[in-house]
Length: 394
Ligand code: V47
Ligand code: SF4
Image (tube, rainbow, N blue to C red; front, side):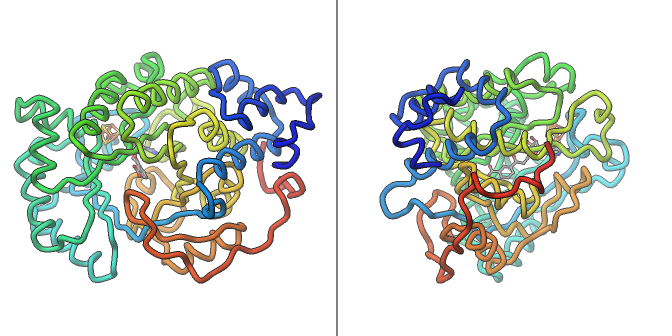
């Protein structure tokens, strides 16, 4: 299929003009992306994503798929906001709300360090007593006691909240946190940027323009960040394309995004299931492929195995994803909403998944430096176009 794309032999194909753009490195428009969403030709979408992934990877790295040995820490699951899709906001979850002391965060960080993690991904709800001083103390102590651990922490929503609590500007808040030890920021809290979808989901926090402004400022002060998009909350393909184009525009301006992560909503403990359409497996694969070709200035696309499950995450690698995220240790946000995937994955299992899918497993650090190329070599798998999509529900 890739050879077909390269030689542009599929002139009669309805997507051939878009394939030509992908092959010649031309930017796709919003209309192109909508047409890709309207197509049910998964094999061609996969081939486009795969082509763009290989082109972005660079010489000698075409088959690399990354993972990280990391740990998720959630210091609190109490949240002052009540986004309808989030189980943290439901009354049962609230009655079980916890808030860790700084010592407890450190105990957990040491537990991860003993297992050899290189990154802590730390995010939480918005808790009035988890303020700027609290996070500065957490970051300082982690950096003093475990200086080799990279702290990827605090979403733009949390930065917005902390800056309001401390009455500092976003930039001052980011600089204070960076000085305390913040190394980079995760991509959460973006949801879908469209105001109408956000209003229906009662997302009162951090509007799109502020989320983007905070990421731009983070890039300016030297922090790399990620970006997410949450699907299954009543969005249309047009909303998804608009979301990705706003990210692409921000990346053109400030350039600090490392990775895009399409997320899928789980509904347990929420009351939205009857109002929204749950994304099918082919919808999720389309998000991967289309984000890969539309976000031409994002180096990496993540297949978040916690939400996709292991098989679909493996398939997503053939649609343009080049990262499976990490070992994680204990995921709470999606599992609070009913995910049945494991809470963690061992490094060797992570490597096996990647190799079985036909790619070279590579352990990375947070900013995508190669830590170790696995001794496992990629299995020979049939090209995507010849593979059965029986497992993929339309
Ligand atoms: O922002 C909330 C989403 C996000 C639900 O940057 C839900 O490397 C599913 O951002 N079902 C947090 N999702 C997760 C996140 C993330 C994950 C992995 C890697 C990175 C990274 C970032 O989870 C939230 C929100 O969009 N979320 N509720 C739910 N019911
Ligand atoms: Fe709070 Fe984030 Fe959940 Fe919204 S999605 S209720 S801001 S934790």
